[in-house]
Image 1 (cartoon, rainbow, N blue to C red):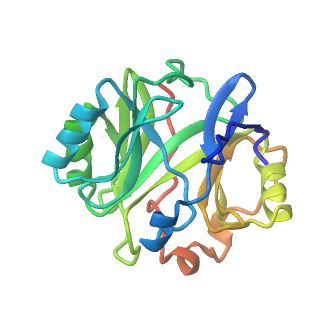
Image 2 (image 1 turned 90 degrees about the vertical axis):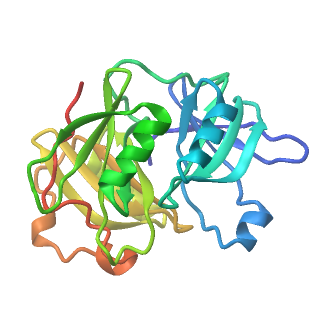
Length: 261
């Protein structure tokens, strides 16, 4: 669907696959551990934030009200930890990153994660938490007072955004956008592979579209990119399945164009 290659990186005790787009390692695939299943975990994507000192950062996270689900542990990509912010949205951290170093340019390639988006319980509180934890900076806030969208920047690059979710959304969470060369073709592949489109396609600009999807195992993800078709049915004319599927995960009162830094 997104053009990744997969490489078996399993050990005797831990089955694992690594995804790559071209020469860039994107992420990995594993089964949910038994302990996670007993706690009610469901299939999902987890993004990792690179940090200088993961043990010190985890300690700061706990002081800010976050919680630790997997304590700092050595792995084949560095020292990793799975945590939750003060509003319970989960994410990962990695220190001493040994591969897949963060990119510093602003050109997103097909197959890469081009955008990260937090559905927060309270946008202002969430931004304060992440700003204190990672030093993330504030981008512009969209001008819709009823549903402001906070852009996020680090290292001179705008990489994501956050907003206050609708009350009927059960839990805060991070959503990840995979870049594709052709949204129309990717949507066809989502459906052919057993996944479902739950919102969109929506046009952000004349050259950028997004669509939100669920894979065959229930993990949620988004796609963004150009399209080879100009007759894609716009979101405004569709009865979106997003609200019924996920309790109203409509992110913004309007579609917001993602700027490039």
